[in-house]
Length: 324
Image 1 (cartoon, rainbow, N blue to C red):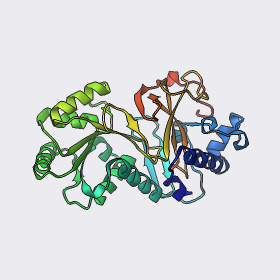
Image 2 (image 1 turned 60 degrees about the horizontal axis):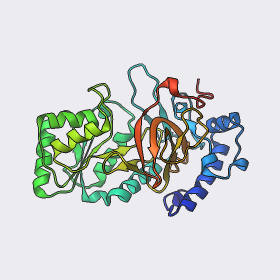
Image 3 (image 1 turned 180 degrees about the vertical axis):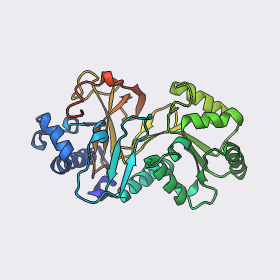
């Protein structure tokens, strides 16, 4: 099945494999099966991808969401405010995650060995269990370049390295959280032609929240680049979507975004309407591939999407069966 997932070529391929993955997870994932049973939904009655139930992401906070009896190789833990319940993603095949993010990166950006990767992820580095740090650390190693590395508090050193790589004409990826990228450009100005600036979102209480457009305008101006790229992923997934500008994201072939009606969580909307973001991540074969997130967004007819905001807990309707 793994080979099929990463060799999806057409919409028909995707739909066929998604229905097979749904049957597998219905049969092997106790939490997901219980959720489907509460909705009176069985694979025998599901003929289209849009009819597959999406498990509310909150289940990862208090259930072990797995579709296999294999041993857990790695547990990823979400970031959260002090005292908040964090999500746990129990990964039984870490190579599936590696294959997903390497193939996903290659799909959008080409061979990782062509890049120097610089990472500015202070709040993620300061805690254990971050799936983002795991991915970026592995990508840094896969560049096979000694200049690729993490930066924690050495902003001056990072600025110097960016200028040095720029002079060499070296293709560079700087991936960072929003507040840290803003800290960097507050003290240093750049004019970068060979560097991709990729933000992973999040002020994490360190700065005033900015709308995406405002954040990107500041970063574009101070880094001297035409576009700010973005990465969309989460602890509960094994795949990422990427934006090469304007906050418009694309998914790799084994991932798909749908939106649900904010008043009726079981109703999948047509494109161009704002709704709750539902993610299909077929790489999440050993966990749950069908997840209803707490993000609000819009999907376009060409299958690109954008994130507009997040639900308040009070806004989540029809999605909270079994959560408590």
